[in-house]
Image 1 (tube, rainbow, N blue to C red):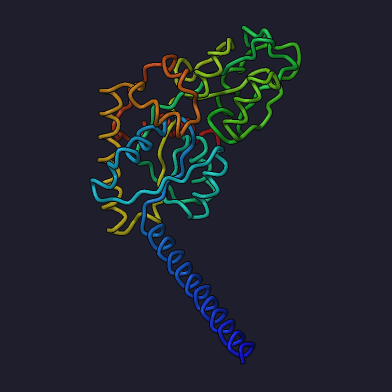
Image 2 (image 1 turned 180 degrees about the horizontal axis):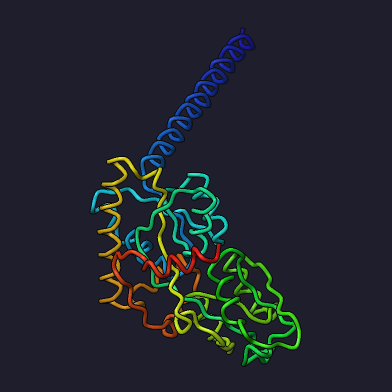
Length: 301
């Protein structure tokens, strides 16, 4: 009799556990569905660990998007190629990018519009052990860059008319964090870097031999997919997004980069010791890229 009662009790426990597991699965499915729905309704923007994305990071951390009634999900990547994949595939509505990449995507059929230009710039930095101080010395040397990007164009522009003793080799290193690490580990002769990676490279004694600002190249943009943002709901989101972006720019300009070092450390993977070395950067509010800059990028393709 006791064995029978034990068996019944055991079966009840198993049945109870089974219901609990099933209940957990049901709740898990509901939670996943809720997350998917929230993500589908949110405005999704692909970003990189670079300072041209700082207004978006600040707006997110300071709840500016929420305050203005727009749900924004920042999709973080380390390579622009991955941002492009997300943009072309439609898993994001927008991306921080450069005109040379976006004009190529437009030429290949992706419908894009420009929400704003950004204040990104790029430096060609040489490995201190390579002892490269002039572009004429780049014969048989390697430059890390990304194909079909502003860094590809800048390499062409920097070397135009320059006589070197041998070919200059372009090495495609898409991940900006890996690219910087290769310079610090003496695995690359030179590379194009934007901020804050450029500051980190220079802090280790490496040298700048070219600057996109001095070359008259202004290519940073935030691009949005027009086919995914054409309806009234998305348009209202974009209006609130732009307001939050402008508020973030104003705050950064007023308080300075040092005030937002915790945000930069979190999103750009920069050690706090680099904070004092970061250059003074003025973040402009929402403004369309200039037609001449678009034409320059369009002419590449």
